[in-house]
Length: 326
Image 1 (cartoon, helix red, strand yellow):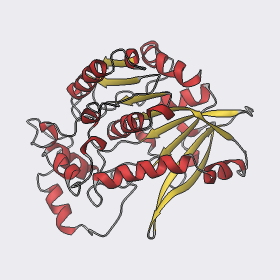
Image 2 (cartoon, rainbow, N blue to C red):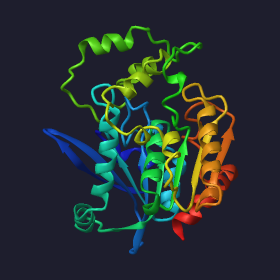
Image 3 (cartoon, rainbow, N blue to C red):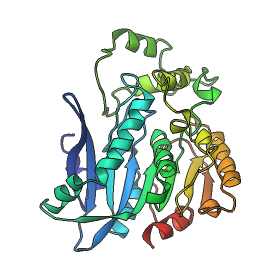
């Protein structure tokens, strides 16, 4: 990542980089972003998943790392843990979710405890106070973890999550022009030359950005998401179907989603559909009255430079943060 530690967004933080998983000779990274502080107690945890259409992105790609989340960590002496994961098209969606499960198990292992206790500035995590977060594809993963580990998480947040990957939107070409202009042959050209034995778990834009745009706007992303998923339980990949489980739970602090009304990458209707169903299914159950949807003017990624002190944002996060810290 070069001089990432000196990036202006990380001013006032210490950074620990490590790997949580290895597949043959490929190691998958996780990053600990730790506020510089005199605080000596156990620190609450924010688990954050990066976006990128499941095709590009990196846990420390600062262009897409929201300022408000970093400020939230500073305000409460919380540690942000941001993992990478295998990317489409070289890998499959079940492999991505396998990585997330392996990351979750690793986070709760003695290896993490030892890593942090023996660092130059030793810290301890309070894994009883976990908040999940993620943007776009990362929002999908944040919601997945919130549903799969509801009893271990205080609250889940997600921004403009692609929470309905089964929708026709991700399977048919869009009627609008791609931004930026990307040839229709982009994905096919990539597939023709792709090393199918390779593994990618990190890509910093512009790397693979055109590939992501091509897959979304020409309708291939939904198909790639299903490729290699035969035999894998669908509800693991489709949160709307997870809500059909008779034993469905959500974190006690609920789920807080924000989405922009003019989103040209992930339609706002996806978040509206998920929230409506979650409220119906969870009515009268723990967390069911704490499902929050905030809609704002703007396009995809609108919140990246928004400070935590914005009144609407603080209001949006209030219930989730209170449950996280109590």
